[in-house]
Length: 573
Image (cartoon, rainbow, N blue to C red; front, side, top):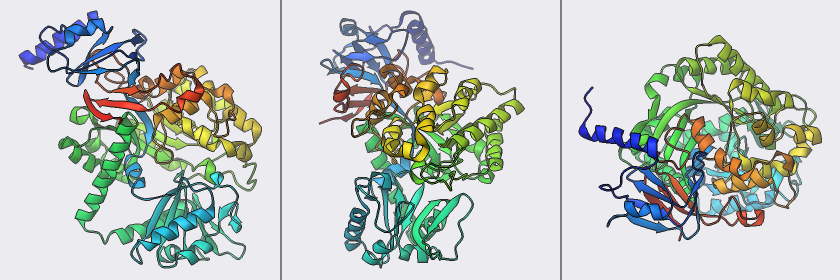
């Protein structure tokens, strides 16, 4: 293989980096220099400096302000940080990229404090929506309402009043968790749902005492409604569909840059979405790095995994190496699969949404095609079953090592299963803000013992030696990593009560979970996750020092600059 002179020079420079920590700057001024900062590198070999030099897309020097002088040329852009904190770019460990974008274009119900308020919001939207067109919203959560609706089943609203207020538009409103929907009579009619409709496997249609569906659908029971919506949307032209997709991606990119997310682990993506990501990346229109988990059914994946697998494509902007599966639902909707019944719903232990046989087939596909298996598991029964499937798969393939399979959420664990993460090398991909968002109703759902010993058990997992990464599950929660950071280190609810504070992370652990550990979870620790010479120049400048300010100040911290590939892509005004 021939190596160009440029290639030889690059190898020589990297050898210099390895031995001295710097590259000779005499003939290669930096493109960007940040100085006068507290630079938290998350690199144990050199944990803190005051300045960073960037050359093109890579970090070329770290050190003191004085040491940066040799890197500054006539065209070098200098960012005077004035004591602000610089950290590696945040790596969002679990979010839904296009759904995040679409959520910014839908009716936002996340601020609603009552069912009556939601009805008013939908009725207002109907006034500006053509008759017969669907009204789609997201973000409601009955656990955050001031009081239960007057007419309800298990605390969930009967949508009759919504149907009266909005009779001519089909309405589909997704729960904040994404695991339940509300629908009015018009939408149920179009979906073919009636009193005779049975609850499907892995789902529930909530009904009144007379058997009438009240318009509330858990998990797989929502599928006919989504199919009806898709049927309506098929009337759009290909150009309209592409325009909508691009608009959603543009919104998602803007959210990432605003919050300092330089890499996003996309937790459930179709092959067609990957095709669009590739098209955008080829045009250099995908500034954020995506690490993708495919979620098509097993039969589709079996014939496409090898063709779609890609590592660091388009200058490390697109990687496809995960398979996403969901074995249960969410705690907020009583869908998490539990070992014992819910305290506040003794007739239920939640839902198993994907059969164990199907999960085993997915595991076999993953291990044979060199993909990471990433399984949504929230309840303690769900986590136990997933760990067992993974363990059985590993035992059947002893030749496969360092697989870094993941459990997405790992929210509620039986203490017996906590050591299994480290033993099996399974990564706990958790979301700090879920603990403080769900905290007000967790003990009501699970009781004190289950909540204390296994709910969002970051400290127990870390102490056992497991790798924990962080995220937000956006659009379930806001994408802001600083929200999850705050939750991880304080576990303070909105009212100031600390939710089992013995499970807190330290601030260094929380930052590591969003940077170095998250890079490791994607097999990308060699070139991202720390501020180290030779790694990608993905950096964030913060308004506050999140490692030292009081808890009360953490919530004021904001992203001032987001830098990806050495390019300044966001500056807070």
